[in-house]
Image (cartoon, rainbow, N blue to C red; front, top):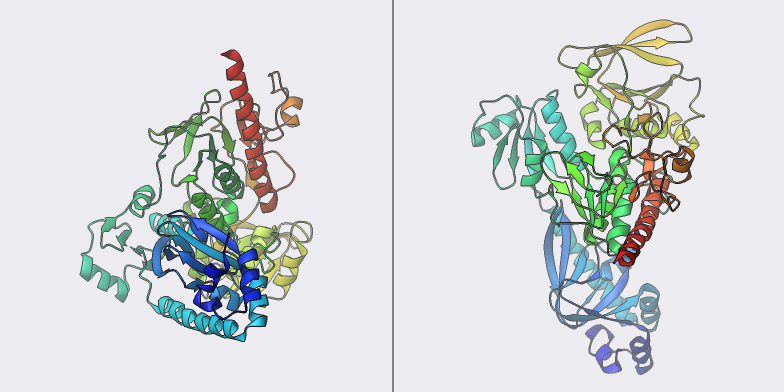
Length: 556
């Protein structure tokens, strides 16, 4: 409980009338923080804080690395910038020792500012000073964590570029025969191998590095730290990350195993316009980044570059590629789906060399001034077309059907119509691809006229639906003919449930193994539904674990 004397000891409030001091003491929050506890996290809602005792460290994450920006000591305030801009906190404020702070909500601050112009002027002046400091920090040249030298059409280099971009690791990419690359070679020496070369920020050189080796050197987690977990989640897309957030926040020992990068297929979306709570839309990788930070902050472990070779449906052990085993009391399958493949002659030979399934946002920079084509009529194809339109000379959306309206949201169709360099070609199919070292041209069949025409092509991106790759699952986990995992009543209808109790809504035919998101048999395939199912799965995990504990006690 705050006292009037403690509030008056804060220089900002020392000149307030006794009645206002008494009201602040009665209504302001009194926060007692342990070392390492945050008063407010980066991105937190605007509020005004004053330090009563202890020491507060100001931290901000730059390129995945935390940096200390300053300190707040007793008598000082923080939160003036969010109040001035009406924004979230640009950094986090964490107790460096046992500390005590008072917090005023925005409306409380404005009530005080209405009474005392002096308080408002001091907060405004401090906000200007702090913003100047932030501008000086952002003006500092940020050194990339990786410098990558490799040929554009080298599949190994492309894999490394996509991995770094998807994991939001800053990097500079140099083509081997440029002046910048020559300067790089003069400093490091030209390698004997012709594969990609990566130089880390500390100067270490890695020649033709495997993705996992690079991940380890960059400090990403690739191996489990714990001996056993309450829940292991396979897949780090929206459903898996939502399950991780809710599992960790509710005290479950939680681990996520992701074979590439958190975000899943949604992480490659250039813009998600209809996700609740983001009126201006949000990119897939930004949504994934926020969810990843949230899950890690709450204590979940996130493994990247690891695939699951198999599971034991009885013990719930996960067998990872290599020799690692993740032991868990329950499992959640959130593996999502993969893009459906095209059976065009020569297509597979050019994957990563101008032909791509899906499209990471980072690929747009490689299409400057080129004519690119996208195959598909869904929202993912429409979002990618809009994103590429800001880079490519022209973007052509190839659609097999007679209209976009049956498969694409209305708002996307309208936005595509407004782009002068975007064309929609209906009743069209790619018949052939051409190129030796990389894609140079494609043949397109116009089904209306039955004529085939050849077009120069700087990039072909495929969005033609998806398949559930679940062949690695044991037969104990029942699936439909297309590989989608059955859960709940669908398991019972298929005759896959033989236990005393009914399966939970998201439980598979193997007790204690749950499925959520696109891998689960369901007519709804949306980011929002995947997030909802991820959180629901944790609720069922709690029920399953509680019943297991109850059964053990009954046996003993």
